[in-house]
Image (tube, rainbow, N blue to C red; front, side, top):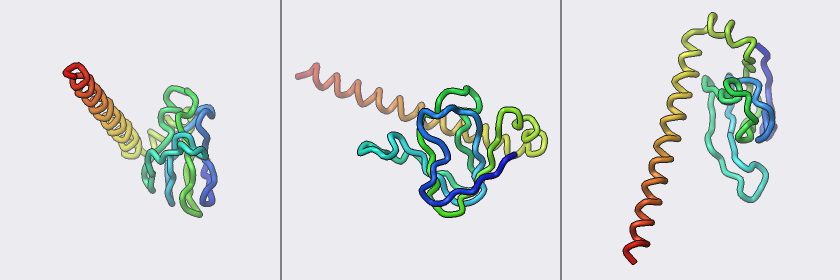
Length: 131
């Protein structure tokens, strides 16, 4: 597994880049942004040591959905490719469970956000109908 260290403000990957690996944060912090570098920029999530990001790219190889940026000098990450994931799993089964738990948590959070937005739209629609 390759390890890379970044300075504050350096980009790990950009929205639209090919999704080819998972990032295991060893030290520092990584911010994930939508529309990074534009007036519409939004921080979606901050990742800390012992957290993972980029797992969707490892699984589906779709382009990155956001941009990841080191938020501290000395932010160090491990790059886990599809080829290396099997060996990573064998050597670190507890860490792989963490990846799966994080995927599940992200999916649950996104589902809840989606349901909340649908509920809000429905409520607004009912209010408009009543007028």
